[in-house]
Image (cartoon, rainbow, N blue to C red; front, side):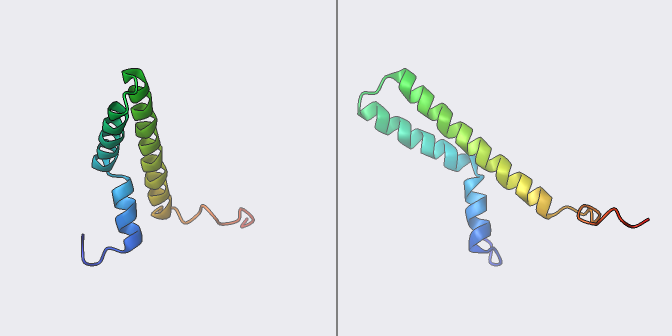
Amino acid sequence: MKNNETTKEMIIRKLTSRKLWVALISFVSAIMMYFNCAESEVAQVSTIIMAFGTMISYIVAEGFADGNSTDSNIFEDDDEE
């Protein structure tokens, strides 16, 4: 962790980490296999987790991009004529 990194930034960095999502999929898959779930069910759950991770990463990336937008005319009124 960087010295000047806030807790919020650290959480965002962790949530967008592919390693986190792969580790979560591995953990859930192992638990499901232990309880004798069908391989098709394990694959479906893994797919859902990966889709959720992709969605979270996209939302965070878009929020970051919107927050750093340099276009200052986005929120100005068009009444200046």
